[in-house]
Image 1 (spheres, each protein chain N blue to C red):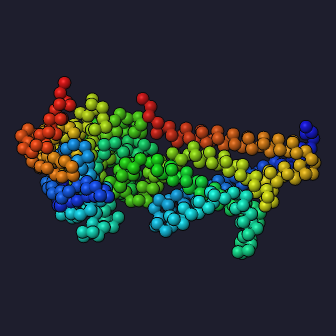
Image 2 (image 1 turned 45 degrees about the vertical axis):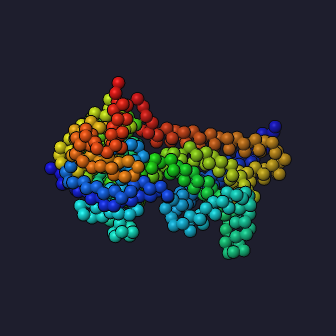
Image 3 (image 1 turned 120 degrees about the vertical axis):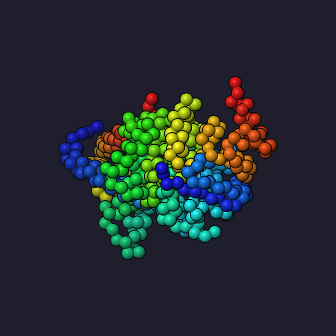
Length: 220
Length: 257
């Protein structure tokens, strides 16, 4: 192993890692938001819309992220969608994650006992209030472990953005490798960065989960 | 005295696919009185009860609350969500499984409807919730979440949640069936108080003692049909119908020791 190359490439890798984290955060937030809208539309929307969304879910889940990103970045301009690498990457991550998030939210909503929704209906609560006050908070609690889990999967999907030249960590690592032939060191650092990131997310997720479920667990 | 609603059920039918859950039910529930629905499980008691606040949609016939049909503007024409919610505001319901919202404290559970449905300011809703919880004997449990309450306490919170809305009619769907035997009494006591205040109450129950002592009329159902409606003593002590006799025989055998 030869570590001196990092004196030169360290800052670049750190910048790349920053962009990786940025892409991950944005992709997760936007993907979750879109997924939540899909899940709600599938629960309350008219039937044709539900079919359309189901088709969307099947197509996106059924194709590799790499292919989706190619289609978006290189195929987009053919239909007038000309995006820079970073926005294209973020949009790609959002689209890619949304059906998984939608399914996680759906199962979270299904885990809310029907009786608790009925109790709200019985006192005359409007559907919007029921969603906001009962369905969302309780559904999110059930969905939380799966949401954290998929967010962790998404961290590693960000490396694919390197193929459309988003200057994230993988991109910088490849560049360093080809310029210095230090493949092993570069990829070792890549692994280390991701491991740290995933560890941090899962710890945060667990802490958050403990906090929001503390009142829900029966303690005698 | 509370303002009490009357309920008129006329020729109500309810199907689940090909299965007929309710057949031509006719039942008058007078204001300020307690009506108990009894009968074997699967006889349609709960289904009928849930038709009264339209949690269950009946397919034909009429359910009239103070003369106004619930769920439909006219036969076959569903009423708007807004109108249905308006009608439900006057009808409290208590469930077998309590159905409290686990992420809210007892007080928040009771205040929620006052804030979201009645539009009360938070402070006023909180003080009215406290009042309702005092009434069911839970003044010292207001800050507890449901997971920290016993079944009997949870059910009393559920009753407080319903009465805080100042309903004119209360529906109870097997309110004590999920409780340990020693916790049944505290819930029945609260229900008796409510009955003595002149609330119209419809109670699906297996508590024959409650039916015998508190009910003004008892309706016996079997296989989706209303077999008999009469004074509790007539149904429980001198039943004429063989189906009621057989049901009570099973009940007594199970409770004998």
